[in-house]
Image (cartoon, rainbow, N blue to C red; front, side, top):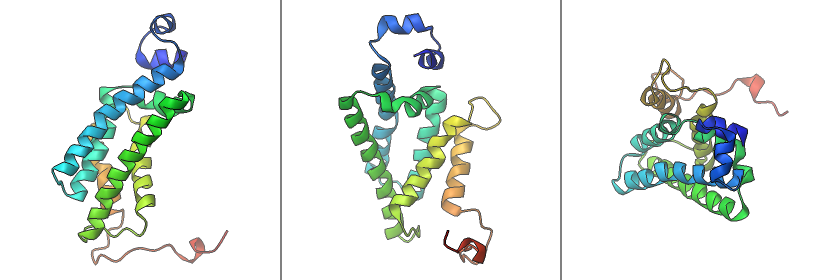
Length: 180
């Protein structure tokens, strides 16, 4: 509870005055985060944004939580296992819904020829890994804005790191292809 109070910028006794449990707070935090990103993603899909633009907007929205709701992602990701069973079921359902929407962006990109993705599930998880882990190291007001960070992550994800002009894929060398 002390970590949550610190992340929220209040004292622990104040926190206990208003809430019944840590799980209740984590549930509220989850609800606010979902309310900030899920309707927006549904709107992008309804507006038929391009898959690449949709991925940028997903990153921007997730990273904006680090500025708009400081500490929320840290508290949620580090305490979601403490959610009550009913809240956890709802949380998982909403997470899965968001995940499926992002996968639909990736599928549309494959279908249009914009992306070459052998495994949509892994590709979506990799993107979330990039975006969601930023709470560990990104600090608002630093040398880079959330827009700039979202754009850099998007570029790495969509364009890769290779500078090959012919479009060929770089593959691992022989030392990385042996079974372990």
